[in-house]
Amino acid sequence: MKQQTAPKREVNVYFDKYAESHQNHANELIHWICVPLIVFSLLGLVWSIPFPHIGFLGAYNGFVNWASFLIAFAIYYYYRLSPVLSYFMLLLVFIFSYLIIELETWQHLGGPQLWQSCLAIFVLSWVGQFIGHKIEGKKPSFFDDIKFLLIGPIWLLHFVLLRLKIKY
Image (tube, rainbow, N blue to C red; front, side, top):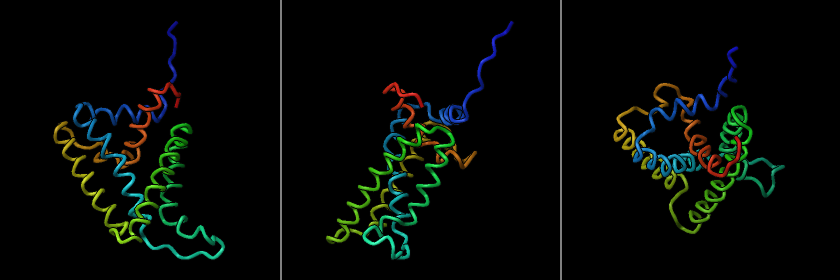
């Protein structure tokens, strides 16, 4: 009698597909740097879009913004793939949010506008990504399926969880 194996979880199917175009060590290293920077800068760019003042939020106006909706969508998507990965991504989003607030503080002290800093990071990180894929010799996964723009960050995170022996 043949023993049946459980079907692969959707998240692992995505990870396997994503890994196909991320075999070169240099490309992987570039992704470890650029993917978090892209996520951070994208949050900062969306955070920068003016959001209406909502009276009942009081002192918390500014903390609820367009990025809040992007975060909610992404975390929900991640939760459907893996609750544990979504919790760790949310923790990273909190760290990124803190850093964005620090950039806003720098802006108020005379530094560049938040959107300018984030746009520079975003563009440079994407240049890095495309250089990595040029080295790899394969096109980015999101060219085949736009979902892979969301998979990249948790693909990296799943390696951290594996290293920490945390089941995702």
